[in-house]
Amino acid sequence: MKSLYFLLSLSIGFLVGCSTPTSEPAPIIAPTVQTVQEETIPVVRYGRYTLIELMPTKNQTHLLEQVIDVTIPSNNEKPYTSVKDAVQYVLLHSGYQLCPSIELNERLSKLPLPASHIHLGPLTLKDTLSTLVGSAYVLKVEESTRTVCFDSIQNNVVIAQENTQ
Image (cartoon, rainbow, N blue to C red; front, side, top):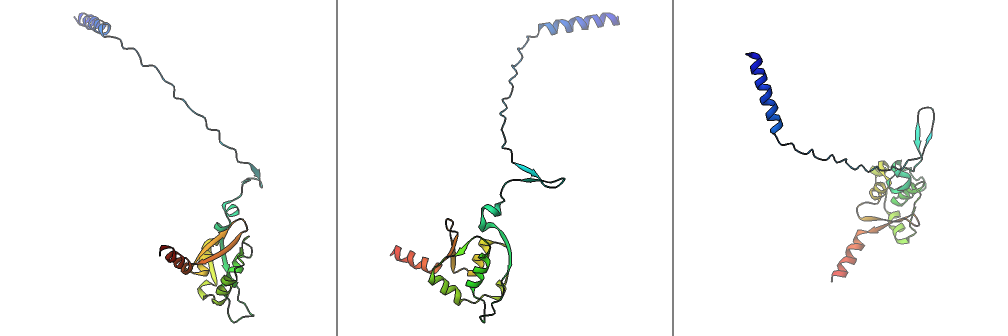
């Protein structure tokens, strides 16, 4: 009896399996992979376990972004160190120079350096210069001559008011 049920279920399964419509398998689409050729960065072995990339750092290519930590020396010839002296000291090894504007140099020479500005940093060169001259001036840089100037905000406001009237 058991074999009869087995044969019957086997034959029904066979008939049902044969009667189902066969579906066509979906075509296999291979994904297109684009290989990106990465530029190899030249390196040189420096010591036993160190490889150094032969590329300039951000500080070397964007000089105003270099981080400095500076202490302004006191000027023994004058009773105080001026803001102009401090700006020139900060620019000493930066690759930049203060613009030759006589009016600006006179104004910065008359401003005494605040005690809180004797030691600045670590700050970027750009932020250090802006801190030294204060919020009354806007930093202007001429990259072709590596000259640093400061425009007075008051002059810009007066010019803007004259243009609107």
